[in-house]
Amino acid sequence: MQSIIVNDLEEELKVKNQNTKLDYKINTNLSYGFLKNRILELLFKEAPLEEVFKEVRKFISSKYNSK
Image (cartoon, rainbow, N blue to C red; front, side, top):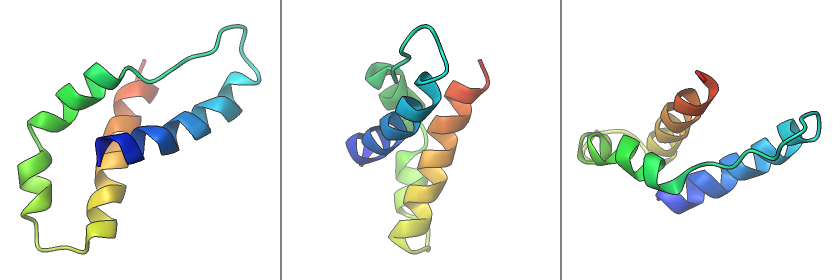
């Protein structure tokens, strides 16, 4: 699940990197760390899996966009 979301976010970063001097990447270790505390909560939520993916993607993205 984490890999799918990170790959999707990497595509988004490629577009943003076109206007920057350096190429930024998502730190997979940090993204695992962000997820480890919330993954069970999200998976046991009574919601479609697509909604869970969107929420996890938004969560990881917010951690990188806040810097």
